[in-house]
Every structure is written in C-alpha cells, then in structure tokens.
Length: 380
Image 1 (spheres, rainbow, N blue to C red):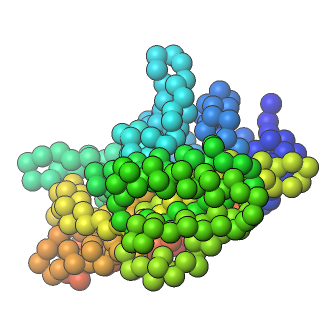
Image 2 (cartoon, rainbow, N blue to C red):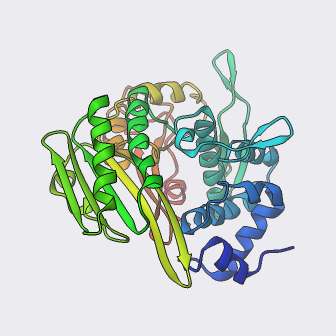
C-alpha cells in the first residue's frame, strides 16, 4: 500500500517537519519501497525513526528513480541494497548490523562508494546528460573500468569516484569516540552529554571520562561541566541545549574534528524528548596523494578525465582536502585528470546539504569544457 503523508509524518518523522515539499517526500518514500521492497525499507536502520532517517530515505528515493532508468542500473542498486545498515544479508535472512561498528566496516566503504556513484550519476541525468556505468576503457595495454562516463557535447568524459574511509589511525580514534558515546543508553532522558578530547586518551582516562559523564548527566541540576587539563572537557546539558559549538578550544582548533554522536529521540504529543552523547577530537588525515595516484591510473590519456572525491567520512573534509589535492595537480603531474570535484554531504537541520569544491588542472591533456564544469559543480 503506497505511503500517505499522515503515516510518514507520524511514523517516520515523529511529528517533525522537513525542508522538502510534501509531494517530494511521499514520492521518495514510495520510490524506495517500490525499488528496494517493503521488507528492505522496514528493516532499514532497525527500529530507528526520526528526521535523520527520513532525510536519508528521501535523498535515496530521488537518486534511485534516476538510476533504475539506465543500463546496468540494477547492479548499482543491488550494491546499495545489500550494504545498507540493517540490511546485510546472511543466507536468505536479514542480518541486524551494529551501527557503532558499521562506520569502519567493509560494508560501510562499499556503501559509501555505491551511493556516491549513484548520486553523481543521478545529478548528471537530472541535467539531461547521457551516462553509462562501468564503461570499458583501454589504458596502455590494459582494460580499465572507470566508475562511469558522461557524454557532453558529443564527447565522453570518464569519471572515477573515490570515497576515502577512515584511516587505520582514525578508526582507532573512532572506536574510542564510539565507546564513550554509547553511554547515552545509560543516562536519563532529556540530557545532552558533550565530550571534547584534547588527545588520544589512555584506557584509564577513558574509564574515568565515562564514569564522570554518567555521574554529571544524572544530576537534577543542569548544566554541569568537568575538565581534566589537556585531556578532556565534559559538558552536560538539558535536552536541546549544547555548548560544544561555542567551546573556544574547539572553535579555534585548526585541525579537523573527528566526531561521533549516539542518541535516542522521541516525540510525545508534539513534544520532543531524547538523550544523546556527542564526542569530538582533533585529527589530521594525509592520504590524498596516494589516493589520487591510484585513481588517475584508471583514466586514459585519450579521453577527458574527472575524479570525484566524496570526503563526507574523512576528518577535515572540505577544510583540508582541497589544499592537499591541489598540490598534486601541477603542470607536469597527473595530466590525465582534467579536474577534481571534492564533495561533502551532511544532514544539516531539516535537509541534506552538499558542498562542492572544484580544482581544475592547470595543464591537462584534455581540458574539461567550461559548461560541463558548471553542471558538475551545480547543486540540484
């Protein structure tokens, strides 16, 4: 039975409103159910509901309706379906996946890449360009298969997509952040716990931080705070109040912040309730040179080439990676690459926001057409 607005509003949005037209929300939910199946959608994110889940379904629906129209689109859709949280299959049964472990898993990397490819293919199709998935390309004596190609003004542009996941060092830090954030299950409702780590804490320090967070969050008197010099700053607040965004050391920190948020949200008779823990720590990631070299070898000297880097899951993202990648686009280096599009997507408020930065090669073998760059960098 097709989704109705009242059901989405009550069962998925929990009474909250989003920055999308109601018809677009209904169509997106129905497209996801039609293409992925009702069982898949029912198991998506387990029993989690709310605006963050709904926004991802809406964006997925907008993308899938474009992908299903192209040759071999079903293969890309299958990659998305089998790797989404709570939809990992074990035999003929759906296997529940621990979201806290998902971010650093192979499934997460495969999903991120499949979604990035799908989102950009859908973007070009919405701009009325012809797109082919997994094209065959001769590179010297080898046959390569870039992620897709786009035809613009009679010329095929070959595209490689990269989604850097967490580095091993970042994964270790991420596990620490996740362990601390899991305390949201052990604190009372209508509490927000914020933790800012100045360094990689020891096991003893982690235990101290966790116990202190629980103790402060249980107090009837809020807000509370606690600090260990050069180790951690802890804030606890009433629901819907946060202090970390204005905490000066975090604001002034030049390095990107790696973070993890875990929480529970409810809507009771129109009133929002919840509890969550937000943990952040400064971190730098320097892998761009190796990644760019690997992807450039998938492109040919005979055709225009574009690399798209989705850095949504990388510490630093758009604050750091454009500068790092620009260093590798010198006049005599990586000339197969006409340009690099760097994107970062996040749920901001009541919609999905995507920011883009384009770096044009100063001396490519095949320059990318100016109007094609305009389409590539547009948001729609």
